[in-house]
Length: 329
Ligand code: IPM
Ligand code: MG
Image (cartoon, rainbow, N blue to C red; front, side):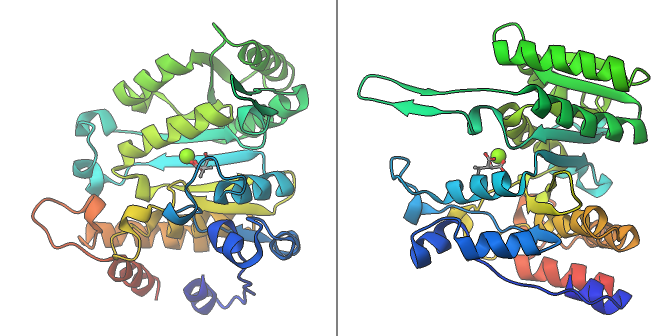
């Protein structure tokens, strides 16, 4: 961000706030009030992944992930855009055969503030439940975001659900059909069941363009499709609401197993800043400069271990980050 400011003559004001484990340690709260008010005052938020072994007891009443979910809910960033582009030079890094990757350019839109993540949770000695609830306005607004993106792209939209089993999915499908017929009749709409979608996304990924789905299906499917791009570490995301304020984060987690070793791939985070520039600050040329810099550095062979070509030198997180910044100069 600082290099973009320097190269393009912008001035950005940064403020750093705590969330997740670091916030629990300091304040006892994974989403402190100071963090919330600073986020509300900002045009955009760039988020470092939460979670780690120190706070990993799933039965603890206070957990880092609660901070992330509370932040998404507080900002009402209901539309999570997870683009998947294949960088040609990385075709060999993907476990999927290179010919299947030809022409893959996906945009997965994950509903982010509803569904099973946020429904009522109950537990006693004998049973536990998580309610998956969707309201009409929640489905309508995410479908509108997806349809508008489809208009700008191929004119096709694929909605993923589990309508053969779940009532919430049958509802999702009905509201989707009504919204699309009424507002976007020109868009070609297709429905897929999530299990079939998981298979087709790997088998024929190039057949997809814009995919829209509910919160948990989107969580799972985007980890899956990240492997098309070669590594979970490559993928950025943008979470948007009704204003231009957005939350930007790589789709990967905190990867505690490699923390502090210089092994983490910085591309997902750096590409998230590109999305931030584009969607919240309206700086598209600057965003493209970052995306081009990432592509160039990868083509030059400066790559972290997760995407390094066999037998080639492995770059550290800092090496790769510096190379991208250098490219922006
Ligand atoms: C993601 C992550 C989060 C999610 C976790 C960390 C709560 O997996 O952003 O995909 O499930 O939404
Ligand atoms: Mg996830």
